Amino acid sequence: MTKRAYCGGFEVVPTSKNNVFDGAIGGFVYCFVCERSLRAALDAMENALAEDHYKIRLAEFVRVYDAMDWDDQEAQEKHDMLAQKALSEDDVFYGTFYTYTEEEEFSSSSSRS
Image 1: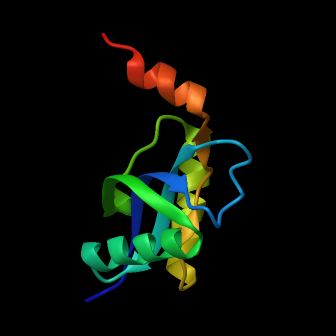
Image 2: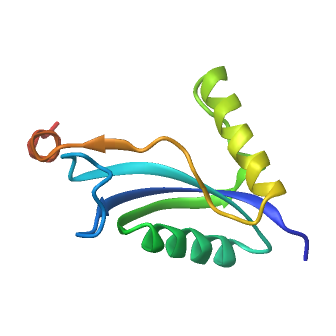
Image 3: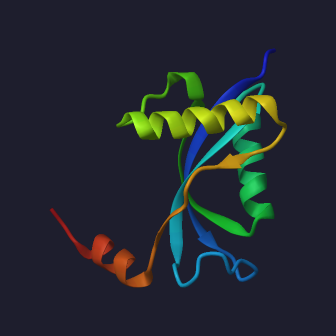
């Protein structure tokens, strides 16, 4: 089976050993990896996040990268580059962490339509 690039979207929270978030209590990140199956890609992403001291709060998706379109050209180029990097190196790569504070989480989780 041939390896393919996969992308996954995860909401994460830092563990007590992680001080990178600088006051934020959580965030969302896209992960990129090259693997032989969706299951192997998910395992690799989960392991990388755990090794970097993130706890997964929600796994939104994991899918083959070539099936993905982004909202704008800049995002497309940025994520294409990360997928290419994943294809050429044996590692998991992260996109930008979009973080939120406790106040932002409260306001977004307490609003209703």
